[in-house]
Length: 316
Image 1 (cartoon, rainbow, N blue to C red):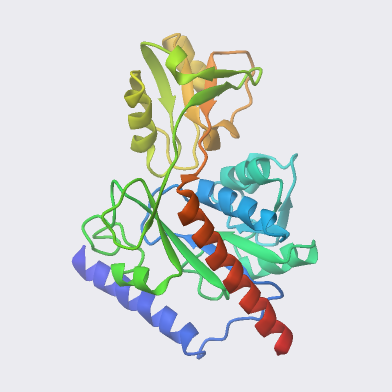
Image 2 (image 1 turned 90 degrees about the horizontal axis):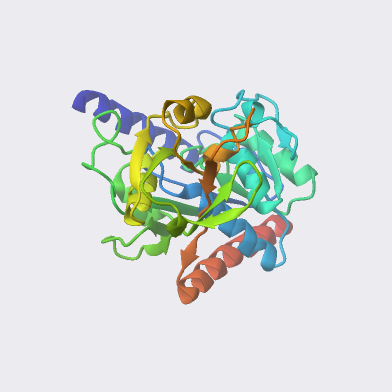
């Protein structure tokens, strides 16, 4: 795979050079964009970070919106404004979850430039791009990379020989690197996604994870399901892992018929399931927990960069 990885690197750096040197033009955008992305494939905890950042920007007085490609949805080629009634099959699971978590306008489109413009037309004065670090056609005011501390950058090779979308040197060019868990990377900001309780899909009641015991089915259609499984095992549960593709789903009623055990899933999975009958199914919500001082510094960096972009746009 190494020759293909070399080709992937060549294409990646060439694209970035063409946009940065303005040989390939980037369309003007009406509002600043904060990209939250990654340089690796697989889950890193990016979606909870996007939700957290939307809350920080709102507290700072902004009206944020979120744009997404809508993986797992119908890959809309025109901007789709996600509402509470939008089917997950149309928008994808992450946009539905972000709408639920933030209440922000969520716009889904394969053309992120068109998505940003749509968000601005609906009143947003700053846009958070859920993923899109490598979507260089989209101008950005801030770049944040999220990495998984357990897997890091893997073997250091680019796709398909390794997990990297861009070389590790890319981390030196972004505004902030966030690490999901403790990281050996210098200058990264660690955060946690603790699992404390579960919420019933049937009636919304909450239950501490300590109240579960013995075996449980675990469903995780996310990029790194092992982190979810390990978190449940750390609470003393015996986990029966269920293979689900990223953004995919499974027949949880069949699981319960096979063995009548509680089903625990991620919150991103939960938006995909509409139960035909009440079963013992729960989702485990997670929220970003970060050192207060680090959170304040990160928020200040983002706000300053956004304001600089706005001032620059006004002067042009």
